[in-house]
Length: 409
Image 1 (cartoon, rainbow, N blue to C red):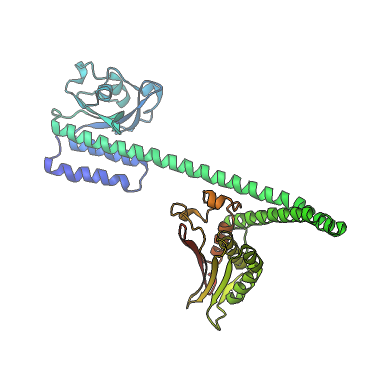
Image 2 (image 1 turned 120 degrees about the horizontal axis):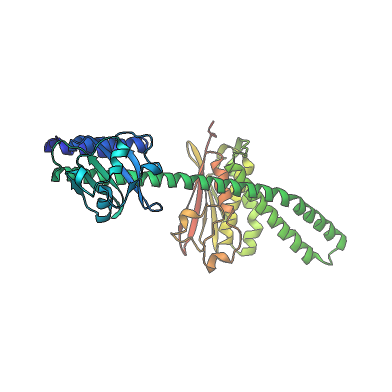
């Protein structure tokens, strides 16, 4: 006997809610089959999935818990079965006299170990495409339109559960592939960086020796060698910095540091670059404030240097770069503002990603590998700080970071 109409909705809602309770897919499908049998007053229920390669159905779940369900010898044929009719016609089918109805497959009796007297089957659809069927068997009375509604509703829930399971497995596989690619990438960077250090060191050493030996005759050529070798060395060091942070190999040696002094030193380093570019370089510091912070001064200087170098490089001739430092109760804030070309809104969320470069003729001419900002981010985050950018295309950018006055744990 079927469940009373007024009790159908609460039970269906219960079955639907069970899909998100965190249990495994088998438990969720068993719950759906239990609801199907209970709400239609059936003796048993099963869920089968169509196998395109074999052109028949395999059992996904069945209330009789047949350990052989799903093996080749327990497959249900597409033609001559209730499931096959429902699958092909995308509609529910009631068979009241299974014994004498050619649309019922006797294979179901063999697999279940029960003589099937009556059956109701509904297609399981995924985005309108049939992928299987949900069946209930042996109701004492005849199946009704209410029973069809129940089974079709539960078939939709089964489809959602099966699709979610596929998506979860695909997501897990994608995550594993991503982890492996990330491991290979980090391994490649580590090996490449290590192998390049020695030849670069030799190039720089011999180039310096040749410059002294040649006594000014080939200064331009030797300076080009030194300049480009130094650039390669800088790229390698940037790659190594990011890789060490991501693999947990980076070390922070904090001590009480005057951020005002760090700002002064970094500015002094880039005075010549700013003058050559005819860009004004301005410091704004709170008078008498040293802005003490518990940081690794070398690493923070690298972060600030990369921000300042970018600001000067992307500023127009005659522009101005303002480096500002502020002391707050729990943190120190440092910002670098320029009035240069700015960053398009679509690129702003990605500027700190490794190797990311803003496209366009205004930025590509400056070269680089898109490592400077990612290194700055790494150096700041090593100290438990935060870094971000604000920009408007054509009007300039502001890169800011904050550092806690005491490094966490």
